[in-house]
Length: 270
Figure 1 (cartoon, one colour):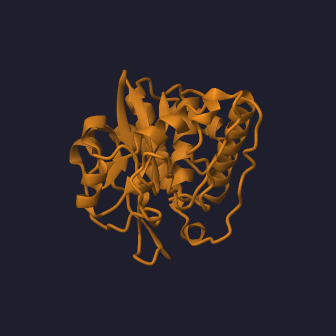
Figure 2: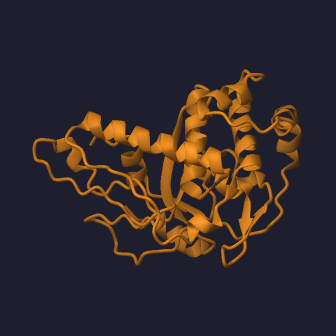
Figure 3: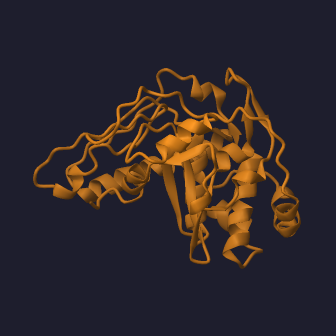
């Protein structure tokens, strides 16, 4: 659920061999349809929006994280930058799992889905022209910082804003985290087929987070609530099913494009 049209970096400088592999790297898109030479052609797909109002209550997690959830939900609203906010949210906790839970609960409770941005036909675009790898990294860092700041200021976002905010706050709390590019759909048969493909068009972003040396998936966007079918109204409804799940147990509605995920998190490596 990105907030702008497709913007692909098509780079062909021969003297920057490593950068060539960014030719299909997505940096900002409302409908992310990254196509590569080895990609099975797909039509552009609508951005993924959670429209499932199912009530999924996890009593085990509710009891396990009761102390964390109670602390975070009692916090007053604060207009602070992500790193400062993250440290305040996680300050009382010592384990990585509790810190991740605290960040997860804060975002799901304080950020709403931006239905207007979903329908925006002319969203802002970033400048990603560069001559060196260092310049690219600098511009991407600036871009993500701006996405994060905008999400906190508006208290609304599409999937990229949710994911980037979670990523930035985890980093500030000393937790390893990555952004994930992929496809999300209620058509579970389609998702199952996509998982067997080398690459495919994407329409959603979520996260991976490392806890005690093990990576897990987290979708803080879909955990925060759902929209009506027309994506004109957002309903706040916490869904714990999208908290931490092992990499071999990805949600049946999600398929990760591992190639694009790799390029997003390591843009200057082959």
